[in-house]
Length: 343
Length: 93
Image (tube, rainbow over all chains, first blue to last red; front, top):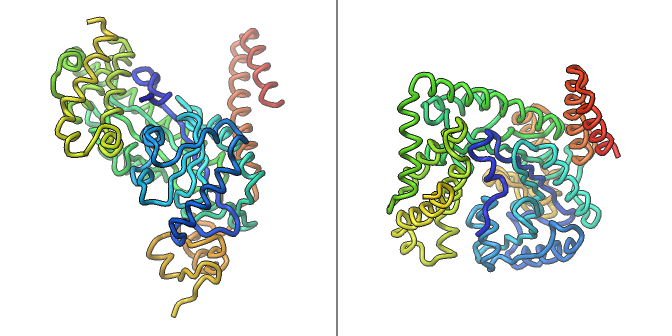
């Protein structure tokens, strides 16, 4: 199983990935809510056949029954129901985990680009290029007053949703995260878990910041707003790291060293423990105390063992898999960490 | 009985319940209801005519590189300024 291309930013940077998604709909075709499964499938086939070979990101095609599609969906954090055989979608047209089109996800097409680090403009340019290629073949719905027409009024206008994946281990470790999501909300941005729902201390310090709607203003405005939010959060993260160093240096050093040792030797690891250890190790990496590759190995283990639905498809029945999850997590983590530390 | 979209048959009640329109024609069929929602949520009922996403992205990248160029010139780092200028030319092309 491959890992996301932003993993190497863990332990080195605060903004670890940039993602832009553009929703587009084809004229004269109903949205997903009113379409019958067979009709949806036919539509997907038609769209993907039209796009095939037009851009490297639109090939090869993977259908929803292949293991490859399940893996890619997991990497891209596509909800598990999109890889269910009962659903008209998804039909993934992907070359790698960084860009592609997901067809019939509420809207007919969602064209996206994921770039490592702080690179929203590059991600927008890439998604825009995919849009140009697809738009030259498929007649997209655009209205002179409403912009790009989408199935949800929330996405109308630009049809764009941009987000930044941030790693904030110091804010979590110093318990300074309380109130941050509300503050972001007051500034018209959402702070969420990368796995959906509210931010959580069990996500190894990762959070996703997204702008509210993008109707009545440009894509560029929304992106500049997001960059401003990331700068604010980055400043707070730096301050929290310095405060930990000033006030709890010995405790911090102990937690970092202890976490490296635990991940190299543990036989059982809960998600919560792996998340906390990953945060401490990442903090240690930012302070130059440990090799960032250890933080990346810990995060890789966290990412690879966090999605039950995805893993159950690959490894077997969910109940069997869930019972052995703590053991599996430790088995995955120890060699990764030992490999880097040379232990 | 509430009005239905002639294309997909979805009623405004359906749209309210699911948060989703049934087809592109629903945007015309429920224009006044949608205007109200757009105004409440986005503070606007019309979306401006804008350059393409790709063009806007290029503008953002260009602005960022221009700021770097200005900073390099301000600290009289002409070697770096030359490198950035080449980068700028690449974006403009």
